[in-house]
Image (cartoon, rainbow, N blue to C red; front, side):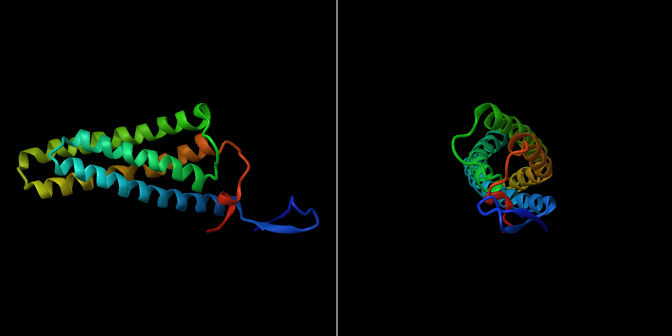
Length: 168
């Protein structure tokens, strides 16, 4: 911990978490946000696949459902941003970063669908395996996506708010 002057009362000081702990806290909150977005994505993916939708369509719908939820969760809870998002500094870079992850997910899920097609699996197992491919693809890109969002989209040297400096 480092000691900093409390701007509300210059005569008092308070403990400020080290940057590494702040980064870890942001990472954990980002992971939790991604879990919530993944649950919503899973519902969309399974619904489309259960209705005999194509793997590319199912993963694209799932990506869109999760991306919207994840933007608002991570923007507010992980990086402590409030108010209207800045289109050029936050929204467009966010869309670019998550679109790369979304393309990877759609591509890997589609590839899995092509690899599973000749096996003539029961529909239930086809859905389960495609769902696993979708989740695995997101797990593979999570760390890279978090790093890009943290470094290039939301951080940008902005002052930390209580949402990003708490240890919870």
